[in-house]
Length: 406
Image (cartoon, rainbow, N blue to C red; front, side, top):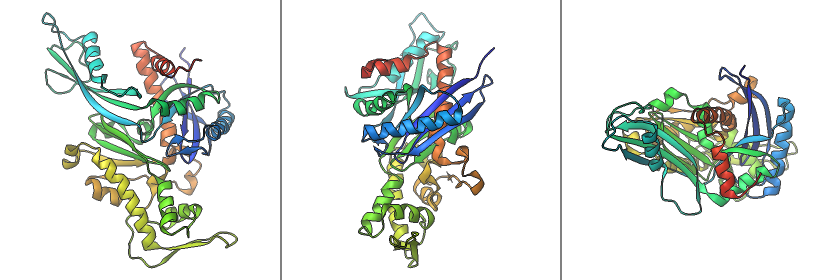
């Protein structure tokens, strides 16, 4: 009789370190059975800057997750991000031998191998090769080419790669907890597992996950990944802008509160009313004109969204062939939907802030899309590996590359 499987996803983010534990039952349904979440330390723009501090945060999150799940956790799926990570799409083509006309698995594998084979610098490491639809002799794409008749098999593959040493920093930190890493997952690829439906990916969807330190994005059309990447700016960047442009009059703590409670991305820039941050003692109160606050927030968010827009295939935007979706803690800022609509020129869907009754529900909070998405990604990946019979191959390749023996 088939048994349930337990998976754990670990997100070491700029603002939080989070471990989510999920139980996947034989019928493929999944339930979150435990969560451990603590404020992050030693992490900057999604990358580890102080291994000792970051490692302690992982240990603290692990203790909480194990207690709430009532389970021992020894292996995790690890989300990674950072400005060094890039995604690019490559096409592989394989022509069948003259005496063959029926496409089989070997022909498909040969096309995929060519699609995944891109010329990279020696310090780059490919940790995702997401295959798209196949085309036979230039005809309409198909997901299942084997058994069809044709002369040429083409396939698109979206390859995601990063700097080996920077990926190794995250991997090494987790292994010293100690935890084993089953796989490294690019953060927006994990977030998309819960933020987007299959129908949305087919129709065309751009997911932008805006956290404290980074804005990660991934774009789908026809179910295929067409673009992905990371912008090294997020909610903390806006806070820093507020502090800097007010000459330190507003602290980072005050900037975070004012940004969330008083700011509006599309608010009136000429609003002369006062936005005020009050402390219990009154010693660290801060004020700022709402128009000035709105301007600072809008300029930074505009910069972030324009960088993302420039990475999306132009024909998708010209033809309004995609919709824009948001996730991440910074995604619930007021007015973001309006700004994104003006920049991308297509439909935009912004998360609704959790209500009072939902504050303790991780599923309702866009801050946890990446961590929860790791559970769904683990389930999907193991299903694919079981079908292909190569379970553990990616983990073995990571260990071999980094020279990290068990």
